[in-house]
Length: 248
Image (cartoon, rainbow, N blue to C red):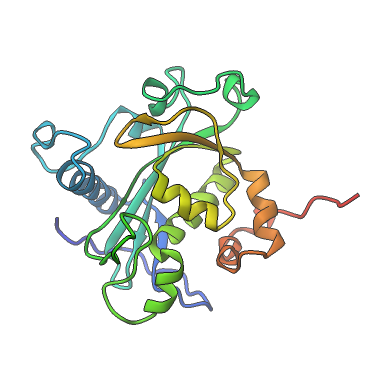
């Protein structure tokens, strides 16, 4: 897969993050790079999708036209991870055809609820995984800042921060995600308040459907109990920054 340089200069941040994230729907080269990365991960590495279905070497589907796409960039502007937020349409969401959901859950049952599916999460193999990390808790390709990466899967946390901020900007209130156990263990460690809403099933591997209320996640961020979540508000517009509910 060809390296794609980010055409825009990242906004300076006093925390000097190693990785940065950006919405890529208006950046054609990066959007195409995300489809290439999805092909690499979903077709060639994990064999979830047949590679011969995508002879041009990039993976996309009908839901991409209803999605907000995010990319994580390394210091050279190369895309190293991607994910998307798929808006619910009349046809539902991608997982509806694969996972049994608790359809009587008030959010899932309400067709007007601004719920999105987090899907097509993919991370480049250019970043070495430690034994036992599977596909998510990653350390960087260099030893610089390695200790911090070992503690939190920095690429994935940067991606989740981008998904959170994009959700705030687009008015999404709930996430649905089909999550495998290794990723669920990571997000639970960081107090993401996902609630399982259906049984485990084989949907790009063995996964279970989870729902997360972003207002509940706001409370976890504002509590400051998890230091790694403090950066989720950095760069977010002031009118979108949540406020802790009145304790009364």
